[in-house]
Length: 469
Image 1 (cartoon, rainbow, N blue to C red):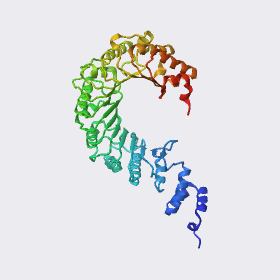
Image 2: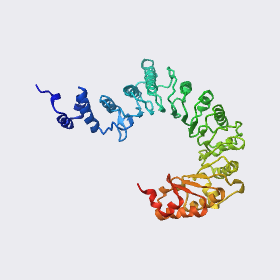
Image 3: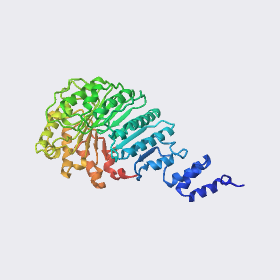
Image 4: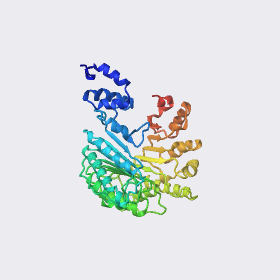
């Protein structure tokens, strides 16, 4: 008697091409041969590329993400996740659905047998018809256990990058599981809503201290970090980045400096964009290991006012202030602080690169339009300048910028203007600008427009080369 499995593979493929998705899943579950044939056809039907390294799973199906229901289906197909190296989970607003989705996410990680580069976890919040705080319906113990198993699988897969964002369901209690000693995790990102409540703060400290290879932390601003940093011991940390208003108060910036002083491998910090209203007492630590510093003017002045501090700095990025920009006095106060900062930096021979935002309050009105310059603020050692948000300048100010730069940065060899091409320059305008650069800044060798670096002469002679595919 002839059975379905006696048919040649070409005919089986033809049959599967005409079958419904639900039928394909049933066939794929029947045996290894049909799992390969019917499973492959199902993956084609849902446009899932099994060779793609990124897997994005969300509560609802989108053009860039599959749903958890689809994930359940593809996990039954052999090889569907064999090339995955980065996994992103975006859980539901519903607490009950989040619990189910975490279990499914854990099951997926259990099926993966190769190391993962990155796992990103996004919680959307809590929305439940059943009060999770009710004693009869307390779901936190279940969530606590399931989330612990999910992180254990991330540990087993030697994940090197972990991102935790969003609002945790049932945060009235702290986690009951202890993180394992981890020698694989090197990058950790967390936002203000996740784990920065007092209930979870101790667990976060324990997690980071157990991560012996962690080299970079990226954190979205929260004053909670003033309680976390003093308790961290991270011998391998080389960089820490704060996004937003995280370390602006005198106590917060001093705690960050003390953290840097305790970690001698820490050479790159981003303080966020908080502009302090009051003057900060200069840093008391030498921090000679520091090479890159990104901060607001007031934060930078705290670190560099004393020329004996941070004597090996190579890169400085000035962040736009975010405090009280609506006040009329903010513009003049900001540019005054900027000039003070320049006077502190110009005599530091170690600084090789300076990054300035073109939309810095008052810069166009008070500086560029008057091409102000100060002999005390000439950067005779600086060779590379980045000017961010260049498109925010009016056309006259763009020309004034080059005249101003020729006075303040006379030794420049490299100039980068971000977002310049988005202004709609045609070939003639681009060439004309490059000619002005060559005239005002004759030492410039490399000009970067919209992240494309070329010799200045090349921009003049063939400006359209930048737009070729």
